[in-house]
Length: 374
Image 1 (cartoon, rainbow, N blue to C red):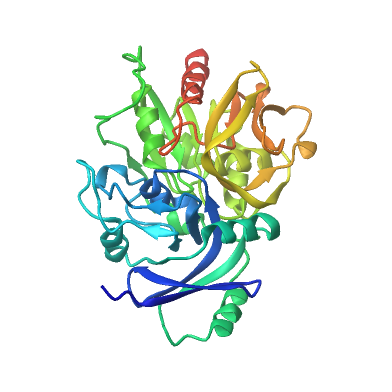
Image 2: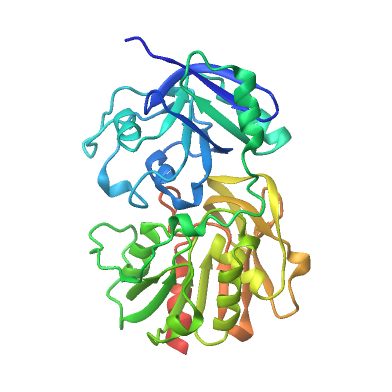
């Protein structure tokens, strides 16, 4: 099989030649980031938090168990492209309905394999996440592609929530037919308003499993619209882009604080911090993977967590009413906060996993506890 040549061009001037995969003949661009997970590539690709980004995996062999409809975290592939060392052309798993190659092709996503992903990751770790272009044109001038990469808007200052959020409110009605960890029959049901900045389906599944009837609101929903449904609690979802640019979300959360128990994940965590006057900053290369250690400062327990973010809350800017509850042990960045006087808390990682370990699933129970006590 003759595979077309592809080129990956980074904004620092480095170029790589490899094989075209995915939607052959396409060209794509975005911020190049790396993920250290050994599996879960479909969940990563369909996670709305990767909007505007091209993902490279540190694990060298990707695609061996194929894809299926159940492992999608949204309605389609959200990442702009894929960079891997080797694409498995065979899919061997009883759940697989389509190869990763066909899945990428059907979703119009371009990628490249046959490149030195170890070198790429070393560049990103030393110089930081950077803009890039993937081209399947064998005649493309590498330096012209570098120029295109440098013209891509920086992730700083970008509000991407409007590209991934629902445009209308809806009830989450998918039955929870497969879950990890039996939480038992809920004593009562709780009405939860979830603000969709790019929400993952498994977050909705976990909330449902714990006894929540979830109504999902657009990222632009106002506090009045959310409170009109008289929710028992409010959830702030994950999502892409620069949290400081989501000014409408920050203002809405500021108005909602104290009215109902509130729980935020990732972008929702950052927005919660910004709503009380803290600031956020861009990490050099972010945290993306399924084995990041986090310390719970309230219990002393260590959790292995699934993470995906490029920004963090600056703990030095938090007000006295906010308490840091979790710390990332890789770099001591803030991984969780709580506002005791507002019945609100958030974490910078993914307790719902998909992919990843389930150490942090207890956070959903804590949210239920806050609603039960209100």
